[in-house]
Image (spheres, rainbow, N blue to C red):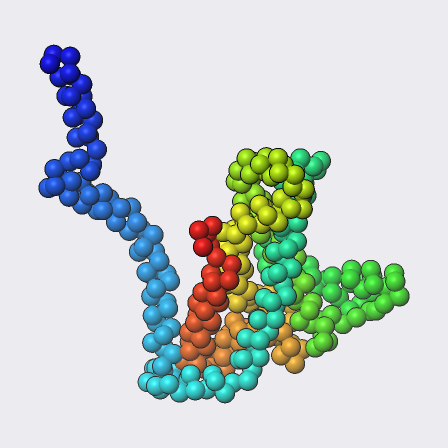
Length: 318
């Protein structure tokens, strides 16, 4: 009895130290305290979201049902703004341009980012400098990026692109003033600017893959290509989902690049949704209609995020 009592006492104390082993009333009080601390710690971020995201969305939804021109007070207009949107060919043309930019630019930039991340995942000479060069366009102000590309695309003989094309007997080409070339030229800029962040995300995800998976594949006789497509790519699925969704959102928020490069032209060939909303609100002074367009844009982004989740999946458990 004397030898087992301390063990029993120690076991009882250890058992009682666990929250699940506490009496019912005390266990509930512990969980309540944890819940309160959780709510308290989440309160600043929640408040920030409600004030700077939730409130503007709510205001936009309310104003979307009004006729408002900034000067006069808003007047209730019902569904008139939404009816106008569905007959606004220029708005849907802008949506189509965003879809084209996303359908071409995002897959290309994701593929190049994955290639670069695979290269940088190995101990190659100069990889630090290469990483900086690829990432630099992302952290450079978009206005500065647009100004650089205005020079590159300059139709004169001083434009870098036309200088290069002139070496092979082509050009000069009006990259930003020809309706057939302008949208493709904008897509090239979005690809160039977007590779860096995607590359770093892929690189971080690759470094988190367990080396034992590759060792097991080596024992099974798998080559580098098989390991890449059977191990690396599936393990990068959460990163791919994150990159795809954020890239889609960023694509539909593109404004300053279009404003500096083309102002939606020529002949509306590069107009995108945000630029069309800007025109409606600040050039045509139809603020109620612009808010309705913003609500439609929000719905488009929600649908695209849902489709991305269904197609790509966000975790390995899907």
